[in-house]
Length: 102
Image (cartoon, rainbow, N blue to C red):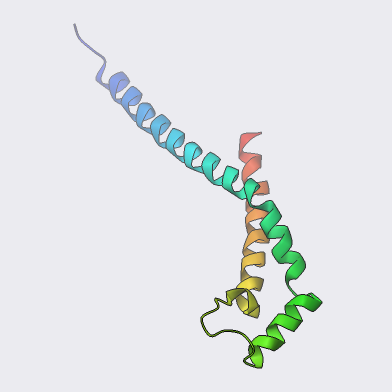
């Protein structure tokens, strides 16, 4: 039987595209599920940043009143600010990306 080579190649190409998009959508679904589950943590971090508690913790760190072994990235003004900014930027990108599916 003779096959239309262009038709066969087109179907192969579309099949590759479909599998690529399926993979991306699967990854994105997993990541969005994780993001949704981390909303409480994000809200807590946003409330903590710049609060009286944060300032007290920051001052204690500056005064050397915290254990040296304590991880304190959350007290880094830039670290927490950058994370919250990244979340705002991601939120905007997600809104823009959602337009692709309308």
